[in-house]
Image (cartoon, rainbow, N blue to C red; front, side, top):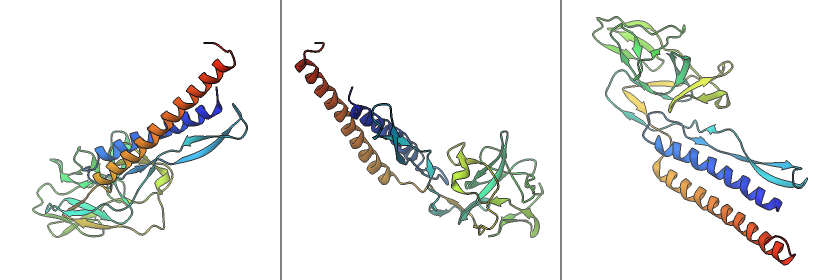
Length: 238
């Protein structure tokens, strides 16, 4: 079989991965603080068919960490980050990172996210607020203030995008150490960050990927037909 059909097949498989990635982006266009993922490709050489035959290899998805639009909510415990960084959350699977700042105070006085996971303070402990607090506010540095008295600072860290692994629509696990010299983001209270992916871009991406995929499939069919005609002409199997 022609090595060209394998090259076309590798390209089609790569476009299938790209379509899956685009579908995830579209599904999360309304998810708070969602960061779009991007699939990139590279050429790889193989000696299986020809020493100079180039195939398409799919690289691990990269995250687009650009800022999403910040919208005002009026809820004093809704927080957005302006700049690079993440809130630290304690889950059953360990510490996780998120930019989704839709927080609330539970019955035990802990600051938690929408799933009940505990928000951490700068010491890595659950952020506690007096249960009888009348008013809680959080300033632009992440300091939590209850009835005018500071009760602690939120843990806000920054990691290089390549050290992050998505473990939910807008939550990440991190490997290694956080960036030490990174400029801390500004905490915007009474606001949430939106997804940085929009539906219009999603439609364009789907059309582009689908057309490329269809062209590669037609290429494979053409190779197959050509080989079939060649086999008949040479008196090969009918």
